[in-house]
Amino acid sequence: MLEATSRYIAEEKVFHGFIPRIMGTRFDILLAGVSSALGESCWALTVTELQRLDKILNRFDATSEVSRLNGNAFKKPFAVSREFWDILNDCKKYHQMTSGIFDVTLKDFSLVKFHEETKSVSFSISDLSLDFGGYAKGYALEKIKGILKKQNIGHAFINFGNSSIMGIGKHPYGNGWKVNINNPFHPEKVLGEFTLKNAVLTTSGNTPDYTEHIIHPFSGKRNNEKKCICVITNNACDGEVLSTSLIASHQDKQKIITKFEPAKIIEYKFVN
Figure 1 (tube, rainbow, N blue to C red):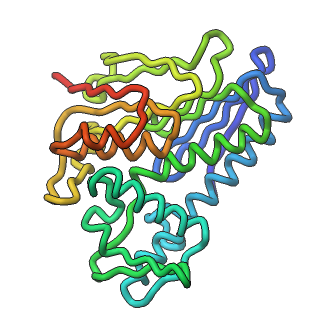
Figure 2 (figure 1 turned 120 degrees about the vertical axis):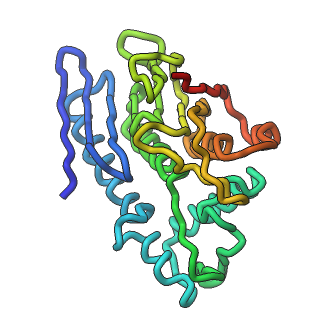
């Protein structure tokens, strides 16, 4: 059963929702300038949406749509939902935009076959699976942004594990939402500070607890550099894909960047 908690700070008119683990990481949301009832309503919709997306994109859940696809697509074409079909085509678009660096197969996206008439997908080899780790959180952020818009909530801060952060409107005591980037090897050291206002900050890199998870799809080599790349964009999916691609790419980074419209890109090296 999902563990989700929330609280309302009446004097500040701020609602805070927290899930310790969903879609592979922790999730926090702050809603500013809302009533308790509106906060609870929006939180319920958000939790439901995150659980729904987790059932599509979480490859560690044996019953999720991506897990069922991974387990059956080599045997025969696997019929997918309309939403998952659109997600796969979105990832195909990003694969092309990044000259193949962004690849949810981590091998060769051309081995994924799309069957338009039946909206089904098949794999050309048995040893192939899809992993949406560099896309799913961005997709979820965009979905949650849509929920907030429908609820007429104009000021919010949404944080997926400190690596995918969306700031909407402004903080109750500021013109935006301030975010610090700390050195994961020396958490007391602040590398930089950003103010988000209707923007998304995505960060890709290695940490002490999560190393060598970045794989170049062409060479198969793992990136073990002590650095991170921060990208600020208006679209969370763009930011996720761009930061993932830039940290994985060995060259032609400028060529990748020109295909997107990032507001800011900063690389930090973690020095001892």
